[in-house]
Length: 169
Image (tube, rainbow, N blue to C red):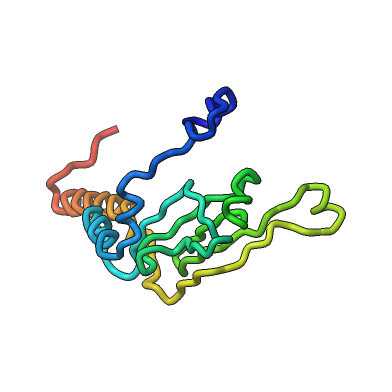
């Protein structure tokens, strides 16, 4: 049930969402590896990211599942989730140098931040560096650019060999 709809329904059991079998299987490393392979992703640098799933950290639940193949992000920044989770969710930061998974501490209020000089505090819980650094050429866009470069090189070769003539102005 959507949040908006829940305002009009008094029975709280109606808003409970049953989890699909995916959530049970996604705890299994072999299952996650199979899913990643279906998308052409293999190796240590491949991960499944789940969002919008509260992680009950206060009960000892971890956002790291399936021996690190699945990471849960988000899941708790809103105040309404903090009672369930005990924190303010998780953020994934990934760039060509590595991966960071951080747990957010609850943010009290703007007023408190101004008066006490506090801010959103994040604690790093996973840090992977030393991975094979990704470059533009390793991306889908990079592959497309390589193809365009190859096409331009063929055009230049054809021009130099006289197969293509310069247009008259």
